[in-house]
Every structure is written in C-alpha cells, then in structure tokens.
Length: 202
Image 1 (cartoon, rainbow, N blue to C red):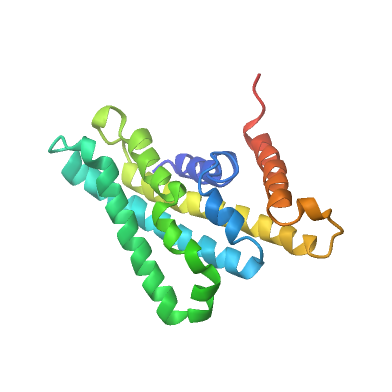
Image 2 (cartoon, rainbow, N blue to C red):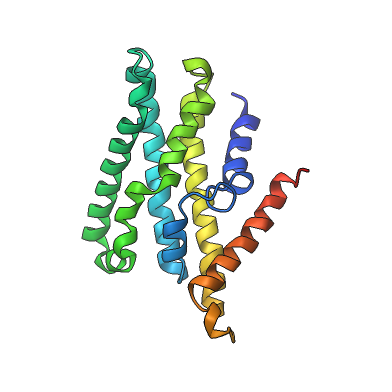
C-alpha cells in the first residue's frame, strides 16, 4: 500500500482543494451556521459523516451496479437519493440525541441534502477514481478518504470562520458592513489565503 498517495489525498482535500475556500461548494451552510464555534463544529461533524458515508455507498453503487450494467447516466439521481437518505438519518439522530443542537441548526441541517459539497465529493470520486469507466487500484479507500478529507476541510473552514465572527462581535464595524457583508469579505480573504497552498499560477 502506497501511503504517500493516501496522505496526498487527505492533505489536498483539507487544504489545497478545500471544498469551501477553493472549490466554493457548500457556501450556504458555511455563511449561515458559522456565527458560533460550537454549532459550526457540530455542523462540520455532520457534514463529515455524510460525505464519508456517501462516498462509500456511492462507490459501491457505481462499481457494482452502474458501471457493470452501463447505467452511468443514472449517477446523478442515484447519488442524490443516497445523500438524501443519509442526511435524513443524521437529522433524526441529532433531533433525538441533541434537540438543542437541532434547533440551532434550523433549516441548515436539511440543506445538507442539497449541499453541493456533498454531491460534489461523490461525483469527483467517480471522475477521478474511475477513468474510462474502470476503477483504479485502491479506489474504494481513496474515495472514502477523499470524502472524509472533504468533510474535515469543511470543518476546518467552519471553525476558522466561526472564530473570526465571534471576535467580530466586539469589533467596531460600520453598520453597512455588519453581518453578511463582512462575512463575505472575510470568506474572500480566507479563500485567498488557502489559494497559497496550491500556489498562484499565471
């Protein structure tokens, strides 16, 4: 087993190709739930669970059903059904185990279903690890790791943004920039900082 390849995938998805700050996927929940650190990390944990599990299940569906029977054109609808099922399961668990956290998430928890970051991970797994419709060596573990790395990168971005926004509560910000405007400015600066991991190309 070539560990360097797996380490590269993990580092790439967390820092270089961060799904929020580099690929700009999942911005809705990123802006909406990042006001406080606690719910931001909890949302990140929920997204990580969904991206990892969805990556595993979608790989199995793609490898054992869609590719052998030449049904690749059903990839979108089948992946959406898998993601929606696991988000519903996650929502039920949080509602039962942590009702306070469920109220904090509000509408953003069901929005994981249509979170393009979660769907993007599943699609990228098939595009990267199934070139020409054939699975590369270790594609299952690589898909699962990329799903986990994407969730970890999402959590990292949420944690950083929430920490900054908590400190902004005590800052003297012009009224016209409060809340959403200053959040987008911060997100832009964070995105530029993360682009440094991949290097600027002219």
